[in-house]
Length: 180
Image (cartoon, rainbow, N blue to C red; front, top):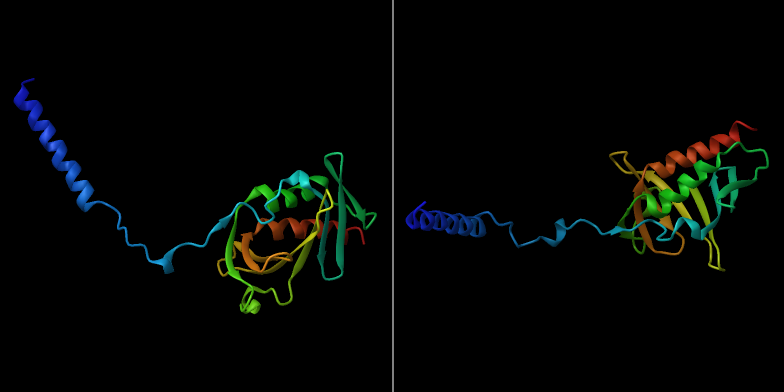
């Protein structure tokens, strides 16, 4: 290969690089209205091991369980048929299982559109080490039916969490109804 050929290849490389940098670059003008909402690490932002009790409520149905030796033990109702792994799945989904999207501050927000004026279900999470329990209220499903609106009792924020939470909650409460 001759030096002339090498210089021609380098010249083509410089021209192509210049073209890409000038014309194929993504626009730097970002419209703040089109910026996606921030994602939280998880709804509870806690490790699954930090949760020591779990109470799931919907209407008159309620299941209360505590973590004992790495497994979940249902205390109320006494004869509920709820697998420990199902309760672990709820905890995992609320902690490390999936990110939750921050939608809006509840201050001045009409909660009717989120189904949170009269929540469809509630999950109360108890933490160890003297931390205060947190209630998570579940509202309506989003328009696409892929997630559900949620609100924590300790924050003025509406979240969008995956539909798994509602699915697992339904399965837990089925264990109460089959026993009744």
